[in-house]
Figure 1 (cartoon, rainbow, N blue to C red):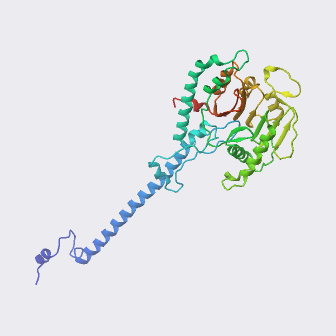
Figure 2: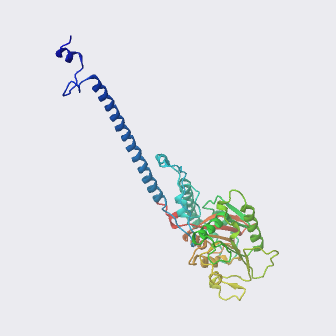
Figure 3: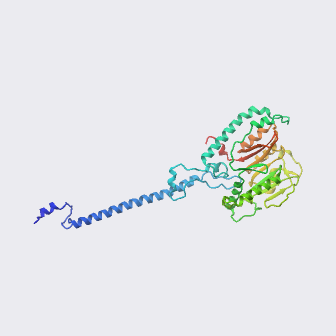
Length: 386
């Protein structure tokens, strides 16, 4: 028969106040209770960690969203598209920020919202290419200035054009329409539609004063230009990749023809005016000619002109000053250049100083006739130190 002393020897020690609390049943119950409490603590810790991660993820995504919104800008009233990245849109997409992600805000900021699908690293390469071309051109100016004509004769035109004012910017979506090279006409129409939706979604009329897609064309074969322009937009209108199903045909094309060219077919969005452009410094040339500033004021197009296509038989050497003096800049300027007058470098330097880059040039078939296409960019694009 076991004594009380034997009981303490044979049973594991348990720090209890009574024999009942130190029994085997109490011990087993205590172990179950402790396991349960341990599980609750672990579950609470896991829940806290997940809750913290969830809240931190939301805060980080909100922070990244706001810092990526920098650089939104506009040109002549146009609305800049929102910054794009290639990050996942899942709840935990912020985790992917551990890896470098492509961003598109630099192109958007430097182009007043026109380019929104060029990654920052590609845009930086384009900026360096422009910088090197411009630096090279400065040296060429001094070496070839003696080839410019002071008398009006174009003896050395081919030599001067071969070396001077090459393309210094790449537009990936440029297309030739009616003899002119335009940078991404689909994007021009899309930006206009984006602006219209932002101010009044139900406003759709082409004659609405706020419609933002206006193209001016004067000189050359204007009728061929507007015909090809509309045909191109028609061909793209119903394709599946049409962005937001925009009304690509909503652009107005204004043809300025002092000789009153005949229009063989009526098309919505075409406007024919029976005058041409003259430089301000040429004085009054009669009712058949008006300055660009007078035309814009009369038609109420200030800040709405996306493209100016001009072939005025050597008036470009004077009228470029009128283009650059406008209160609201024109997004793309397409001009045919004639000859090599002594002020030739002044035109190109002034366009460059105003923020225009050359995205196309080609010879028109004559040694001293060249077609040029410029695109307006923001001053930040030319800040090589950034």
